[in-house]
Length: 63
Image (cartoon, rainbow, N blue to C red):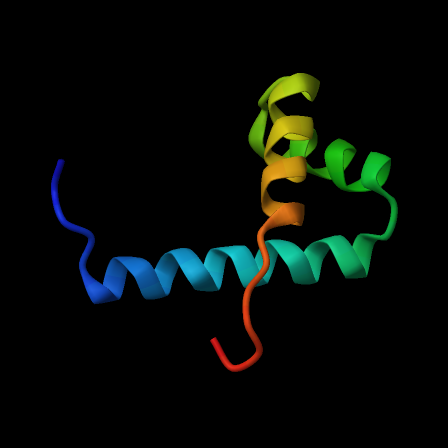
């Protein structure tokens, strides 16, 4: 497995932050999943799994 660079980690954290911000802006889980389906073309199941994973990631303040 290749090591993760600092830049890759920073991009990943920013992606998580953006996703969490979208959750707050859009509101309900169902609305977020619907948005993800429309934007990505992924299945409802895949979008629901992604929602659950990202929504449960805890980032410390300042990271």
